[in-house]
Image (cartoon, rainbow, N blue to C red):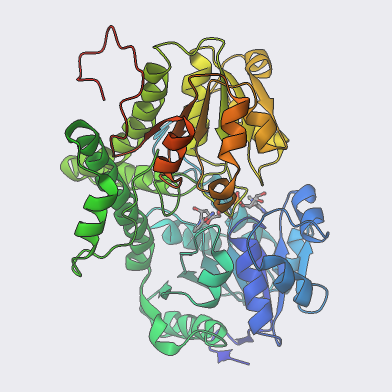
Length: 492
Ligand code: NAI
């Protein structure tokens, strides 16, 4: 075991927050470090009960086997937050850092109340020295706030070192990303004690990550690197989505443009897929990109860098524009009204291979269509009904939950969802959508039948051959039978 000058060995790790990051990260640590006891704690009894059950609270390919292999041996899930903090040598803080929805910085700043409460809990109960690792995504200098809280409440003989170790996993590929990370980033104080703590965490990762992929730096660089990485990824998606609008107005095909651009080795071909909005590899959505770019915008404003803030804000604006543009396209194509029309929505998760719906483009497409009185028939292979309704009845999406009940039907079968509808909208790029029997689906829909492919995943020529009017992103297909009496732009 690694000895470090804080007079401790890393025998026990506690992770505060059993979410999309805390659960998988600790499962991978336990899997690779049999000598370390890893306990993930959370205030939510429901979440912990799910982690201890056969049905884990999150879906990630490969995760079930890893959790089942270590659970009860060196991996534990508990609600006894205090006890696990007291016993731990190293604590990961993996709590949520959502965008603030109140007060100063509302709608942009990261809400750090969960981080603060975790830090206060550590300060209150700890009786021995600890390394505290900030894994949640936070604004630059959040580690300093954690250090201030801990130091202000320090007990005799107890020392803390605060490290920044941001997480880069992507939902849907979390296990692969954690097992073979592009890089592990560890930031800490540039003091002998800080270096000792950094080395202790390097030792943990060193069980399965090669040395050249573990990079160390000062705490602020580490914190900013996470925000910068997400901002660069979101910016690429907004860039290709901006191109998709030009393609639709000119006859260029965004897939061809992305291919040509991506072959430039200076640019590379990843994260260049246009779509309806953020969502992992194909547009942005999910809990992170939007909130982290907003967080960066707020940080720039606080640092009195308005031009920089404006630059990053535009990345968000293009994402909002893309969702709105796609919804408008649906409405225009359906003869400028969707009121009382049945529309099937295929996919509600923010991207494939996850059940996570946070900031999913589907939420906004559904909102815009519900605002126009459309009747939605939603199918997603992984998203639970309760979760879906929670998203659509959120006050930011709908001010009348009874209206959502009236307009939304959730289906367990995609063919049932599409039956008797005027249009089908693909919002998530689930692989199973590609191989459905679209002849059968076309036969069960009202005519003319419209298909809107918001993820550019289907065989459009084949679908048009079946009789569908197909509309996608970044490409003009056939001229659908569109009646646009008020539109000023040329018909597509
Ligand atoms: P999450 O919302 O899934 O999980 C956070 C958990 O922390 C919740 O279960 C909540 O009950 C728990 N929690 C909050 N305060 C607590 C406290 N004081 N004591 C005990 N438990 C507490 O969040 P997620 O997605 O795991 O994200 C965590 C952090 O990691 C965020 O800062 C996020 O930005 C970042 N991140 C998320 C990624 C993702 O793909 N979801 C990827 C990389 C970073």
